[in-house]
Image (cartoon, rainbow, N blue to C red; front, side, top):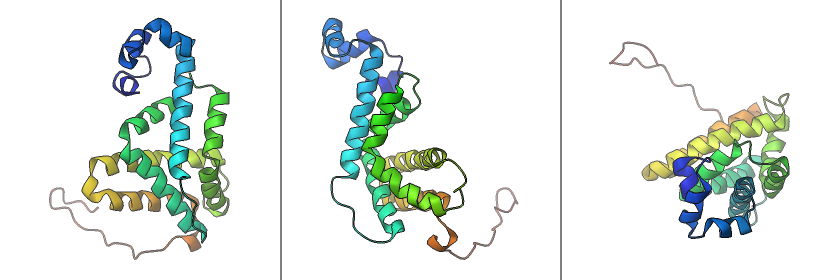
Amino acid sequence: MRLFVQQGLGASTGAISRESGLSTGSLFNYFPTKTDLLNALYLHLKEDLAAAVWSAPFPDGVLRDRALEGWNRWTRWGADAPLKQRALTALETSPEITSATRSQGQDALQGLDKLFGEAHAMGPLAQQPLEFVIGLVAALAVTTMQFMATEPADRERRCRAGFDAAWSVNATDADVPRRPAAKPTESKESGYER
């Protein structure tokens, strides 16, 4: 996994076998092709994430609270294991991951998708495909995880800010607590309002 993060998914099978401590022949006994290896790693990471998200029952309650709990578990997984998070992000966009493997990975996290799907049905992007909205939320989650990992002192603040942004993609106006709009301030450096 470390090798894929450092060198990309094009890392050679020779380098992969050296990294794993196996001969290339032994590696091919477990994974006949590199595509098989990448698909196995993708599924392993999805299952690892699902185990973190579903390790304890979700509390009953309003949809926003349940979604926040799912978000917290998801982003903490990535912030606590940034190597896994970066590898999964790279694999998500790889054409080597088969549709069958993607489907298995999606099944593992179906409950989390369901939480955001419930909100999506009522929200401002209800006319957009759910997969598109989940992709937007996932991009926000990746950014949130990266900042949580690199800014441990602000970890919880970053987690909550990321959730608020993700929720605004999904929620109805009634679901989003409104804060008074901040007044624009003048930047001393540029003289522009921000």
